[in-house]
Image (cartoon, rainbow, N blue to C red; front, side):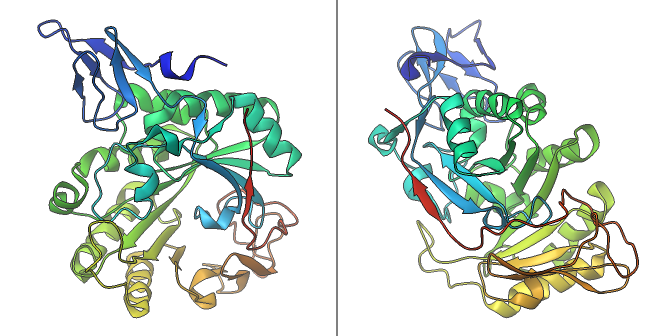
Length: 359
């Protein structure tokens, strides 16, 4: 495995006037002086070259239910090996994983593991897939790509849980090795993105359109519904209309509950009724698969056939109760449910099992 602190990064060039390293991985296009780091904190200018300082270093490993990512239409019921690193290229004031994504201490990265070691651990643990999660894998794309390539050789799927804030320079290579993604569409206003994430909305929309029309990556969308910030009926309807018009009606959308955290501890939790209304807005707009999350709601977590309304996958938190798909079709009317389904679902349930990897 390469020396992590000196792993040469991709997607950069030297500014012809200033001599700074320009990172082109994400839309920030950070210009980084010698000895300094970019906004994400993990991409640094070492001796005039851009390096990724977290290659091979993780904030931890855990076996999760795949529904926790959340993915509802991708190998339901199976176990997924999750890992993350540190840092983030967004500045979300509401970050739910701020202790990892906003970490400025490399001591957070307690585990050391190379790509093949991670794949071997997933295989040994019976995981059907590996998730790049906890913090945004875009900023450690080189590490994620190497893991994904090793996983593909072993028949193990890979999943990115990402905000989709990536540049056209990098997205083909990043998504080209992945099997699935859950993309955070945090809101549907530029004002929200500027004020609460220090980024822009349009690059995220561009990523979603790219995934739909230029890749075979299965993807689902998650919106964390924050009271008073992105929960207005007009904004939610505009978002759902855009999804149907640009991505089609079959992309699953998850509306999840916010809990007070990081710099928004005075903002109240999302009322359950708000999530139900958001889901209904999506269904009214033509989205065929809309779900609620971070709340216990069997009815609105479960999958029904858009053709005849039959209950196909019943979810109780992350437990699968009923599973009635027949080769990916509704047994009642034959409607094809989009996604990746197997004849029998996994039986992992709600368990979360930490793993210890590394030297």
